[in-house]
Length: 390
Ligand SMILES: *[C@@H]1O[C@H](CO)[C@@H](O)[C@H](O)[C@H]1NC(C)=O
Ligand SMILES: *[C@@H]1O[C@H](CO)[C@@H](O)[C@H](O)[C@H]1NC(C)=O
Ligand SMILES: *[C@@H]1O[C@H](CO)[C@@H](O)[C@H](O)[C@H]1NC(C)=O
Ligand SMILES: *[C@@H]1O[C@H](CO)[C@@H](O)[C@H](O)[C@H]1NC(C)=O
Image 1 (cartoon, rainbow, N blue to C red):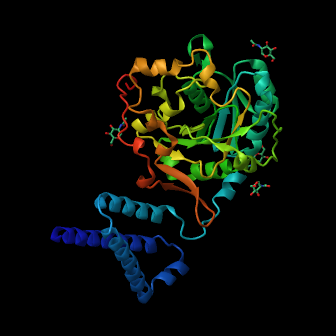
Image 2 (image 1 turned 90 degrees about the vertical axis):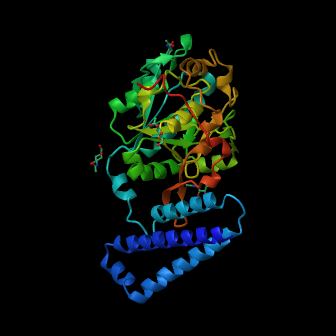
Image 3 (image 1 turned 45 degrees about the vertical axis):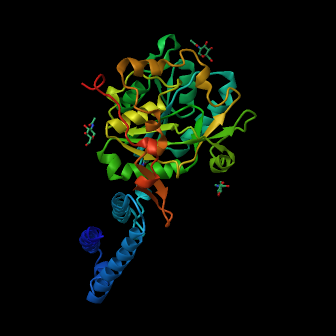
């Protein structure tokens, strides 16, 4: 028990130092004179520190009652505490959103591609009417296979480009990597995102993107941003327009539990150049991409809590890519290059390390997810990158 007490004292010393330096940082970061005056009087200062130590002490006492894995648990909580202090706004922030919205800067090029089929016509029309709702922050881009579809979308106010490269044998499906690289080459933006042509979003996407493009992480590190869908039955479907309430439809839909993401948004720093010829519209692209991102130390961010994505399900249903020609062509590529992830669970959206949430003041913020909320299958992940890295 003595060694426990010594460890406990060590904790207390570390925590005191951390708390004190934070407190100092907190004061020094106030550039506003009124704020400085408010925090300088000694009594308040000392009382503040004592209160903080008090609450930390209580917190540590609580930890004593937890039996095993104490050290891990405690350090996880401490880093969460530190991160929360850093990421949660302490005062009403100056409206970052306004100047951004008033400028014509592009936050994200959001693209998709499809082949016209009668059954999906209404869904595609819903996509081309709703995706242009967030202009100029989010610009919709269509990669066409048939130029006549491209022309139609162009008349609807979309950007259009021909599909740069196809793969998957004679199925000729668009290769995801080349659509990203083509978008990056041809349009100036902070983010570039892909979603299937039967997905649409509520206005949460505008707030989330607006927040993300201003964040240091997105400006400085490679990121992959994910969003999980909810299925909404569109077999006798409503026509959607700019004023449709997607949030309401989402609430009536059925959450998908398969763990995969339905939106893939990256910045220019994402290492697309090493991604193999995996195509959209065939199984095995989403979870592989997330596993690859994690193996490449890309910061993976889940925005599902603030962006409601609906999948407009038609007769052919949800797992429609299971019934197509060359259904496993992506898996064949992964096998050949020896880049199958150690477990497909490593590609689950729940393995994202960061998430965007709305905090208690109604502000959109990005936080690090508590390691405790991370599923077991997200750890011990491995991908052999030898054959794809130079
Ligand atoms: C944004 O673009 C519109 C139309 O192209 C233009 O009228 C407006 O002046 C631009 N605003 C800014 C802030 O650049
Ligand atoms: C392209 O679409 C148009 C109009 O739907 C159709 O008439 C034409 O046959 C299509 N072309 C190809 C090559 O599929
Ligand atoms: C959309 O629906 C949601 C949920 O029912 C509701 O909270 C929200 O106010 C609605 N938005 C609009 C613009 O009507
Ligand atoms: C990712 O980070 C780990 C730990 O820092 C490092 O060992 C590994 O080489 C990095 N992987 C890549 C592809 O940079």
